[in-house]
Image (cartoon, rainbow, N blue to C red):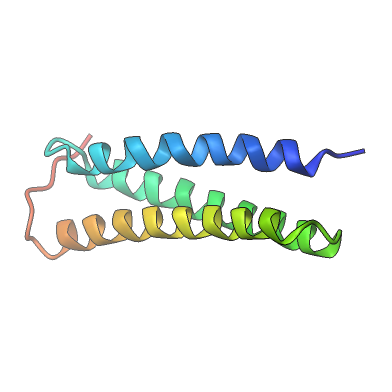
Length: 101
């Protein structure tokens, strides 16, 4: 049987690491548009996974605090994806130099 709490814990650890690394990555002046696109796609994929995980937890009647933790994690990934989207938007609008790799 799948241990959904272990999956949530692992995802929370990854989310905490991403919350530290993504802002620094996006602040790097040498990051390319392709790198930002890939980062955005990965963050969106992660947000979708956590959303599915939250729905499974809800369907299996997990405690409210577990559901709140899943919702917070889902929000974290959505915020990180939004920050990548903002950086990409700035790059496309010409407000930043674009470096190709």
